[in-house]
Length: 117
Image (cartoon, rainbow, N blue to C red; front, top):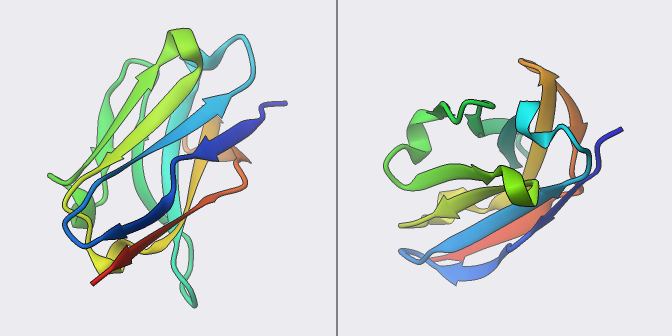
């Protein structure tokens, strides 16, 4: 069982920045692939970014160059640095763990990000 707790969401103006954090339980965090997803009102949940245990990263096209995913294995934490935010980035952001990529098995409760125009 892996528990994930997100934090760092909030309200920001367009062009601003936020950093999301996701703290994970478990002693083998460094072996997990970690991902961020988001769900906007009335839309399906979509993939945003993931980082492998070797810190290889991958992003959806819409956030490339603006978002950066990183991990701190000593703190069992994954981050999502979001810059140049746009109103269309407004969503609930979730982190997830894949014990065996791409099977996202554990999910956090989500954190709201709202970008005003």
